[in-house]
Every structure is written in structure tokens, then in C-alpha cells.
Amino acid sequence: MVKWGANGLQYDLAESVFVTGFLIVINFLNRHFIFLLQKLWMRLYAKIFVIKTMKLI
Image 1 (tube, rainbow, N blue to C red):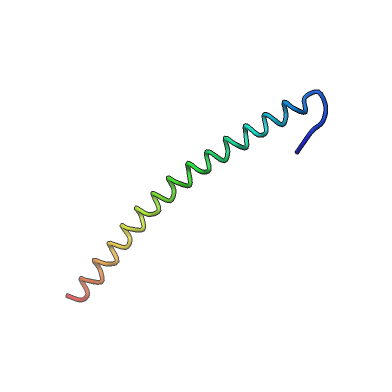
Image 2: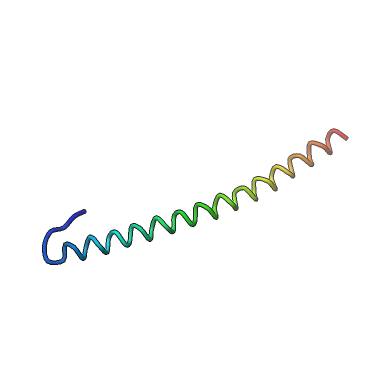
């Protein structure tokens, strides 16, 4: 990953900025993805619960 030479430092800086941005995006997406997943899971669970109670009645 490390390149020596005139543009070695610039390359490292650009790479670290890119990696940091990438991690922030992944973190952001993870939070939203988990939130959406929970919402979907709760809906699914509610449907299953309703179907089960309907069968009992």
C-alpha cells in the first residue's frame, strides 16, 4: 500500500482519505440497513402473530 517517491506522501494521504470516507459510508449504511431490517422484521413478526391468532380463533 505504501509507495515511496515524490508522490508517496500524497498517495498515502489520498488513500487514507478514501478509506476513511469508505468506512464512514459503510457505517452510515449499516445503521440505516439495520434500522430498515428491524422495521421489516417487526412487520413480518406482526403478520405471523396475526396469522397465528387468527388460526387460534
